[in-house]
Length: 576
Image 1: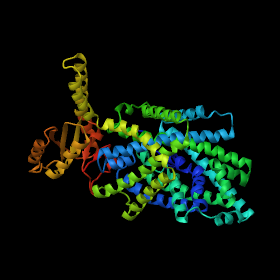
Image 2 (image 1 turned 30 degrees about the vertical axis):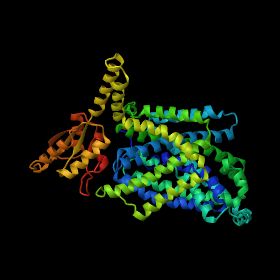
Image 3 (image 1 turned 90 degrees about the vertical axis):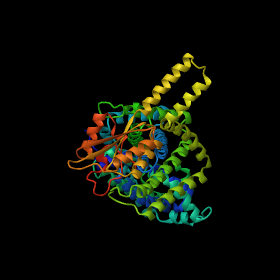
Image 4 (image 1 turned 180 degrees about the horizontal axis):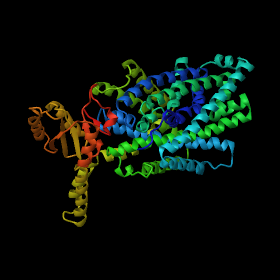
């Protein structure tokens, strides 16, 4: 059995991504909000506090890898979940390339002989190797980076506070006397929109929740919130207390390193640059770990090819990491490391994933109200959080209109791959029709293509699915059939009822199934009665006996008295 991550290990992996944001988000918010940047960053901390409950409720109810994809998969249509998955993968790709490039730039500022492009590719390669060795091994590296980063930020903050109190309040007062372009409200909104990038990485923990020990996930959310809420506003305030706004703007690319040089000398500037290179490298690791959990889940659900599920002796999905490395390098080469283009993809994709997670929480409340969960987000908090994210999306598009076009350019091919896999059975049927109309009837090519296409269709539609019923009525079972018809390209469904000794089949169930059989002639329904007790052991037994993966098995939403947690049932999906 694979080793589960403890609190420090799990926090370090996602924490490196979110805590690295202080290296650029303070300067970014000062650029747009001026002297009110620290207030914008406190607003972001407030929104993140609301999202702690939102993520806690959704992942607590559905503690499976996949983040927003998993939330939507178990509450709505598979196609909607596929959109969230595509956006998350896109966000991780941009994150990996941006973080690796920025880390190399910081390293270059220390040692000018470093060639940026080759070293960036090398960095992506090194972390690919680490995750292939196993998540437990890579977490040790993440911990070392994370602790060093927290030490560096604490040291920098201490020196800046000392410098501020020994050099007076003049700079801070002059900054606050400066006129604001437009209104204070607009400055806060635009500063907030830009600063929302400072919480990227918060969604990562949900993508590898199955690798974490029980009870660790909510602690990772709390820990990330504490780090962001303290350091991001504090460092923005200290920058305004020490530097005139125009000077901060001139050193936007390495503001914290410059602050270190002013407050503590060249050694502190060097330490901050070294820390920046390391923690941004750690954010690359976060991307690999997060995308690994997500893409593995997508492959299990046939949204990506099953080839991606191959594992090595360490239990690592090495094909996923190899593919991600190739895609990241290709983006790096195509954009020539242009961070403006990558930021456009990164900003909108990440914020849309956050919004979709909030929508997933709404659907969980409406469609899976009976499902037990350790905590609940209030409706008011949920709507405020979603509205805040939508405001940030609109704000970023207004600030940088070209970002939207760049985002769409990258989104379309990503969606094309995902939706091809999702709807390939329809495309193959269309291809069969095209063969008959375009190619000469009876020709070797027509016969060969026709045979291969039909074989592939049979392979896709021949997969069996299972629904465990507790004696549901015909209305409920009809919802099951509608879901399967809309979301899964199958012609075979086993409806299974597990009965304890002495229990009997409900009188109307077999008649109801006959009605459904007539209503859905394209799907062969097989009704099976199993003796025993429904639970993880029975699911695993039937999965092995019938050679049907657990993620091809469905149940209705369990109530508060259900004796098992959802994650104990494997990858079983909730569909009603």
